[in-house]
Image (tube, rainbow over the protein chains, first blue to last red):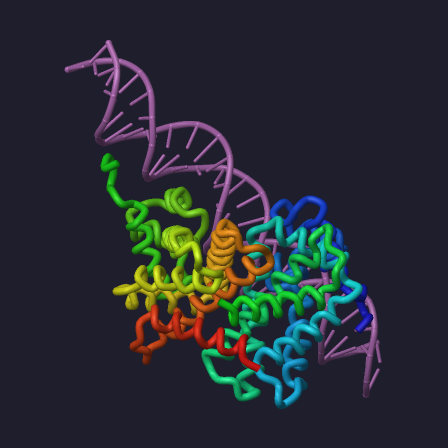
Length: 188
Length: 188
DNA sequence: AAGTCTGATGTCAGTGTCTGTCATCACCGT
DNA sequence: ACGGTGATGACAGACACTGACATCAGACTT
């Protein structure tokens, strides 16, 4: 492990976060990120497949939490109840991380390229959710639809969570979103 | 208009579609597309902001149809009924275009970059749908959630529509998706 | 008909992302 | 000491995209 300067990867992540925040994503070059981390451009691309990916290292863990939560949900739970369990698990994951979430979200919101990357990460989560439901015996197209819905609830709750004037917890916002959605779709 | 070779834009679109289909998106250079259209690389970038955008010229029209349909829905219609009206209008738009849809979808599915671009177009549609609902007096977060749900139904129905062995019409698949979603969310 | 204007296109130079390839060099075990 | 190993550096190159300026066919004016 520690033969060379340790933590190259996280140094690159921190340097990128700082520079993207200071002067914007498009205005930052990979060479600058690498220099701040004491490395070269070539090494940056050994750790991250492209300039955007450096902001999305946490996506894998989020997906793991989602899949695990769906797997351990009560056997009797229907699709929507599984979504509830998953959202609860995700809520726990994000506790105490609102400031980091805000900073990251501000950077992403400011760049069309980064918004694209974020969307494909969310789509991957939706696909993982759908797969987890199929593994529980839920058929298509319900599994796919429910996966999309789960991610939609997360996405909108997260946006509200990091909004400046909001004090509620993410878990509550997600639960609220789920309830509102159920009201809208079952009513009228 | 016709002072020079007319239809440069559509010639570029056709050349891109053909080349992306023949050898793949990543393996095609902009210079090749321009050459096949009898133009230069620089001119390509005058018509399209980047190499991906050449496949998404129809997104604007789709959004217009969506917004119009939401605007003319009966005043008494609730959010979900408005979604139904919008999906019907979109269904009409895609009639007689399944082959083109298949070709385009195959190209997009084969490239991560193109999938990203497609997702941001869909997210824009979701935002337009949410705005249209707010204009009808629907409050947040219901407006945002309903916009996401509408797009999710469209996305999944479209995937099924272009799947090889499917013979049903897009409108039916979307209606079916909407019904399944309502069943899932109101049940249990 | 000559002159001028306009807007699409071409040409060229440059920056930045990302990749392939080979060299280097610290540390490991023997 | 000595070779192996894996992270890193150095370098060249392809390609996406941009800014600046030149060109040139047709439209418009007189």
